[in-house]
Amino acid sequence: MAIRIKTIIIIPAIIIFSILSFEIYFKLLYHQFMKGKSIKFTILGSGSAVPFENRASASYLLETYGGKFLLDCGFECVGRLSAAGFDPDELNGIFISHKHPDHFMGLIHLLFALKSPFYNREIPLYIAGFKGIEEYFNSFKKILGKWVEPGFDVRFSDKDELDIADCNFQLFPTIHSEESTGVCIIVDDKKIVYTSDTEYSDSYIDYLRNAELAVVDCAASTELPVEGHMNYREGLDMAGKAGVKRLVFSHFYPNSADFDLNRLDTDVEFYKARDLMSLYL
Image 1 (cartoon, rainbow, N blue to C red):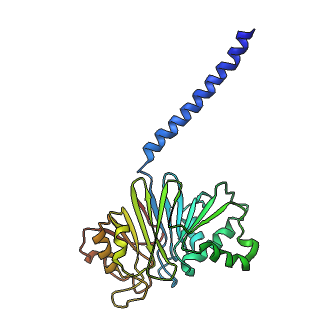
Image 2 (image 1 turned 180 degrees about the horizontal axis):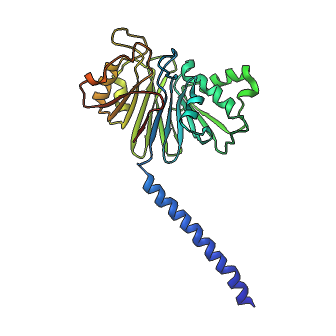
Image 3 (image 1 turned 45 degrees about the horizontal axis):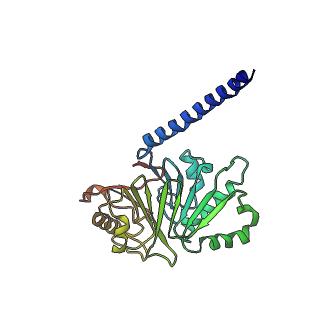
């Protein structure tokens, strides 16, 4: 009888252990297979504060094996996420570069939308960015109250460096507004850099060095310089000095998008951003 009882207990335990071990092994194999093959970068909004050519204001979606992130959250961000077929419940984090409405105000809409019963978040949402980002958000919460209190775990950070999921985020100051920041993201030994709004500066070259992808400000034109912004020639010059592999011009105003890619002579692979365009790294 005792042997039979032990057998009844031990055999199912062995089966369960084998199943769990196989599941863990399969996940490890799958992770190794997917590593380095699963980075997707989607331009949700390639425009600015001035609507034209159906370009939404600044928003970008980074999808890696281990995490999903927004870089800036412009006015039309929630609609663009829907158009891209992306579920906001899956977001791990949001980076906000500075206080200007065409980079920030979509966050208010997104948090309000996530209160809806149509969504059911089960993971924390990190909101990282410029110094004082939590205080800035709270100034809106004082006005809007419960409508932007999402009811799930939100964690703010204005640290210069942090890790979320499989990504390392390194923030750096930019020449645009007092608090403006760019971000360098390291994932699977690949570097992705988003300058957000900024003037040209050689100080960014170390952050851009050998980047797999760089998304740079192109809100100024060569004919009309704009304080706090770059034109396409400056972005191309900076990327060339840094050895950037792929360059995306973005954050266009009506006059700054009017340049001919075919006339640019460079070794850098470059693109003029369009909404819902995706790049795979």
